[in-house]
Length: 413
Image 1 (cartoon, one colour):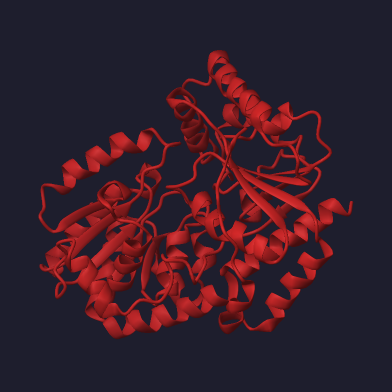
Image 2 (cartoon, rainbow, N blue to C red):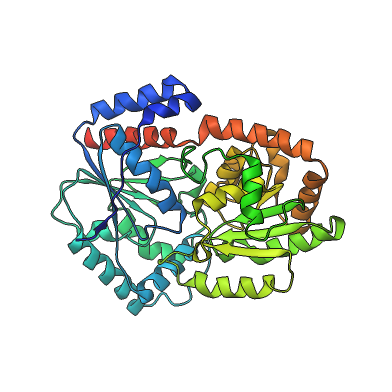
């Protein structure tokens, strides 16, 4: 059988202090209507990516309101995950140069193997992203409802890759995208929903920490506590433009000589491409003592990420493509100003006075960072506005509600 992650239960009532009663009451009502429903999320890694980040809080909250929720993780070797990383990139618009019949057979054979090992005893399966997308095709003897959840910006996918994956996705009972503009025009599923991701304000990554403590924590990692700090937290992925971030830092340093840059990331077992990129980033960073690279390999976990985001004077997310970008919501939740790429789902998180800090070039990014470093009061004002927007739209109980609404619609159909 596939691995099931051992997760506890979260009590949704404690979120009333942040969100009030209306949303929480709706979640509890939906859960009562769905009492006894067995739900299972499926993805390709238990750590290191946005989906895993979501599920670590999402599944315990589902359990906390009475849903029998589980999380199963598929298996695969390096060859399979090299293929699925290319599929991931291709769905976001990169060309897949080697989508040959042999490649397709490896991908489908692995999905078929995982389908045989899947615990089938659920009423609803939610399959996340392209790695396990063909699972539904190989699960014949089940009365469950199947949902495919795409967390990527799939608005302009590579044509050949999309035509390969589309028939498998159209076998699902429903598909979910973060935004309507991410839905490929020729996709014809039975039901389409749009649901944005969310963050957990009570997780170790997002719980409130005193800024002085955070400065001490990053000081212990050789970040000078009195010098300005800009940070990007992201997977080690070319879509996040880490080398562009280093160019931004160099332009900022011409105006603010004492500035420091922290690149904080994670490596996951379903992303072989990241390891070579991590090496290249470190090689470039080693040319400047004020550029620091940290990862889960070097003991930087969720609490340290919290500290970096809280202690930073400006947070950058210079993504070229981005399905949503949980790290933006995380930084805004901590009241920090953010300068981010005008890409994908990022603008959802930065409306109003935050909108001018959506950028499209290295030069523009540097100019915005310099402006915020020189005017910390403006940064604090934008941070407060950002936190209010995240509270109203992108905290975990809202995601639970949206998913329960979809599940109810499917099981009652």
